Image 1 (cartoon, rainbow, N blue to C red):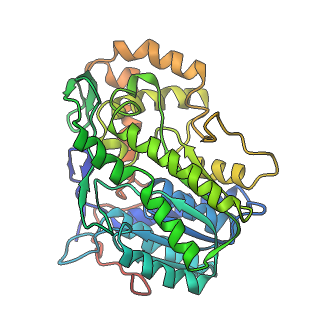
Image 2: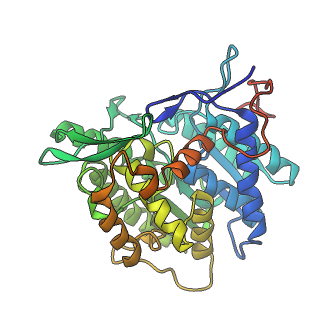
Length: 395
């Protein structure tokens, strides 16, 4: 079939298997070009391994450090002439290249919040051996608690007062006003349950109970802080409360792993185009502006560059540079004064009419489509492609 991009809101409902594979290959080649990560991980478990920072982590572990990897994700496989989700194609491509390089790589397509998925993952990890790196990069709009059976749904809302601001309608390239009513206590609680740190703790506890954590094991989970203009809807909103709980969990896990020479950290990453970030009001407009400024300064990074820099910090000889809350700050280039001063200067002046002049909305669109395998140089998007692409082993 011939597959073209079809965008609805903040999601592209079509994906291109060859484009996704090419995107993964480009990231692998970038990591290879940076050389070997000295003293890197030997056996890594990546939770949320199919897209974004999770995929970048798996690529860096495998092709930067030569690590065996187990990846867990929840993606829709191809069926009835319907393409799979991008994460499915990404993971198939990753495994193919990893196996060609002689690397152990196994994947599980399942709800990572479930005890069943944990049990299946532990069986895969036993084949690999005790892990010395655990990456938590899960992102989901809902979670069913494995013990109580209660299903929680997360929301993107402010807390305490109604939010009035500006955002970007990416479908129509319109700068518009947005009003979001504050969350109630139940919505705050459920968002913490979905996006907080409880599940990260459950994974570490399950691996420890199975005696599958190696001495010196490191664990990392990803978060975002961003500039003050995004705080009402992000850091000071429901998501922020969940991220505070993630940081709480990180401290608890750090104490557990530290007893055997290991450590755990929350890594604050920069704003990038992902399926999750595209859904957050205000953020696409901010990213479009940030991209322009950071590209002009020569400091722009995507997920693969960010995760490479993270791994170099985690496994470098120098002591880890952490903030007062023991967080790794990979958003340091984004949050430089010179960058944020320019953001503050231009932000109030952006309109629909000057969007393309003042921001890199074109670059945002290109990165967004690339997530789904479109806009990759060298791909013939008018050619017939086979949407059914499978793993070499059942996932």
